[in-house]
Image 1 (tube, helix red, strand yellow):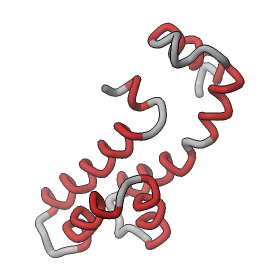
Image 2 (cartoon, rainbow, N blue to C red):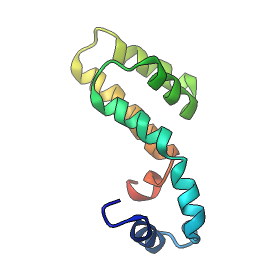
Image 3 (cartoon, rainbow, N blue to C red):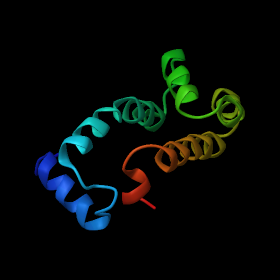
Image 4 (cartoon, rainbow, N blue to C red):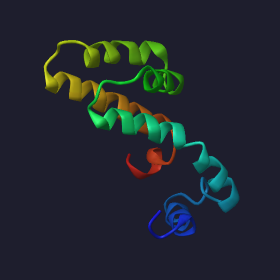
Length: 105
């Protein structure tokens, strides 16, 4: 964002011109990333996940994938286990949604 959307698009286009071929389509798709960003922000906070955040994450990932991890996060498990569960949710969100698939993998 610091250099603007067009510069960001230009860099992505260098990485994958087949995927990033049209700036307007990119802008439209990027606007769909807000729920993913909100979910990841909630996970990074380290705070108790509000129901709204859990619902958002469940909509983005399958319930069978997230429920065991939510149980760990909300349990009396040690902080390392909770951090690991949060990171697994973040990794799953990045793998399945948005440009994170290109930039981070």
